[in-house]
Image (cartoon, rainbow, N blue to C red; front, top):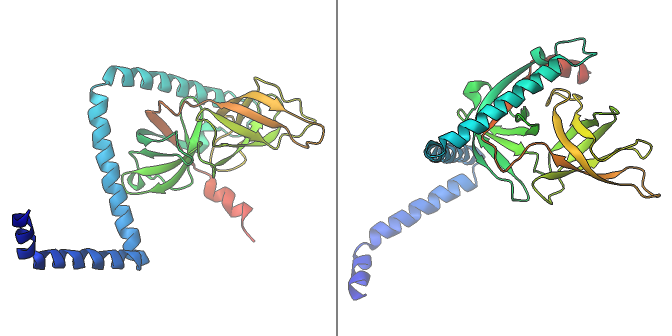
Length: 267
């Protein structure tokens, strides 16, 4: 012990110097917004890169399982696009109005009160905050932040995400929001009491914003509740996407977003 204390005493100048350096860096990044944002972006990029490498190694030892999952997801995506193209009553080609980009999931949480997904695409792939994200099974979330090579997504398992939806059978508009209870269910809101909401009804995206195309599956009604004093149903849906086994997602860019926004927000 005495030898250790002697060693530390001999190196006291170096220890003081390092301590002051750490303190100065902390003060710089804590009280300077520009430097703080810069270091956060750099650290996020480094962490995402490390996660990506770790996932590459893990996937190498699980190639068969991952490939089978990807094949199934691609088949279901093709069916989703076919259903959109065959949707009657569309004056425009629904699919051609959107660009769809596949992205590998490198990090995904589903057991927290606020959940995020990290994917290996970014600004270099023309990804922007606000874009919608789907899987081959249904809606997944919305892009939160982007660096050059990576993007972070608000999962549907995040209380800030409200999805403009409709009941497939009746076309009634409603809203889906996660209730922070389980990773496979969410709340269905604002369904008027006069609507005949049924267990088993499909809940799909409404297409009323620039995030998702119309008729992307969100979930299936599992339970409903309507008491005499209530103006709207209380309902739960089983989410179509299995957030415990996401390997690949698809990011959607609305090619007509700027044109639509210019009409909606022009004074």
